[in-house]
Length: 79
Image 1 (cartoon, rainbow, N blue to C red):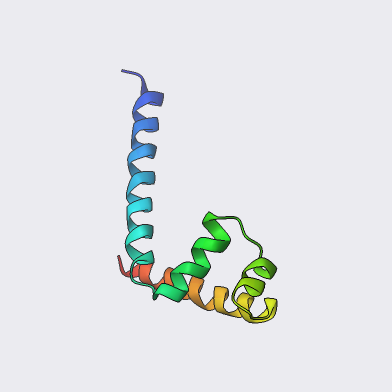
Image 2: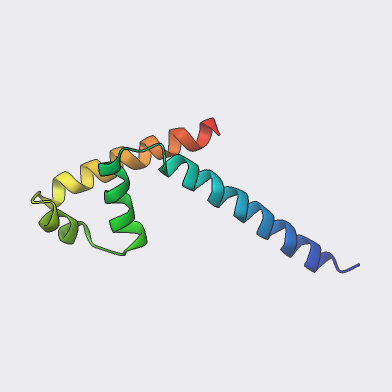
């Protein structure tokens, strides 16, 4: 009967559920949207690096990123 162990297990389960929901929502994005999010948040690329790769401006990448994050947030709330 170690409450810290149980709460740690519960936190881990909750974290896993959140990750599953996030990945499920990421799969609902278009290929271009997903590529941008993965580059910035999973590959740790800067907006400037992504802009250069996609032949775009940093400002445009920032706008797209914010729009995609809003879309992800809405999708997560629907889950």
